[in-house]
Image 1 (cartoon, rainbow, N blue to C red):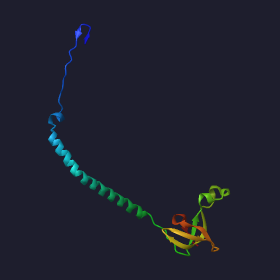
Image 2 (tube, helix red, strand yellow):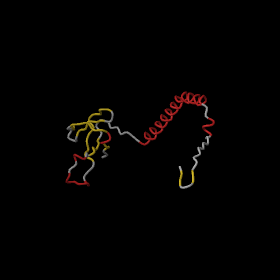
Image 3 (cartoon, one colour):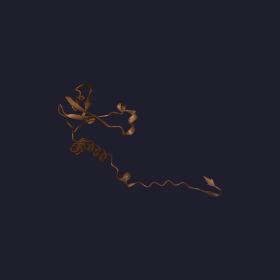
Image 4 (cartoon, rainbow, N blue to C red):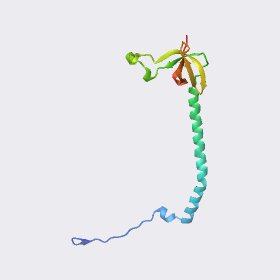
Length: 135
């Protein structure tokens, strides 16, 4: 390239990096096979860490949570579900209905309830929707 009266000479200057000068294909292949051999061990260690973490979280959660259980003939209050609330009560309406009598324990936190006239309610209720009633 000539610009005006001056000529430019292109010079190719290559400076080899340390990595390029010390690279050896055989050593690299040996390191790759070694790291592949250790991969299963690293996965096992990671799995163990996950299991220990999950156990720690479960222990913390279970320490704070107390499952409620009711016996037959206990009195309970039932949560008023949003679709069953009376709109004229507005936001100050009751959140709990009852008392109801526990008629049957279905297991796994489900109960059949009856009202105070001993008429059984049509569906089962879960523990999270019930609260003990104290007289």
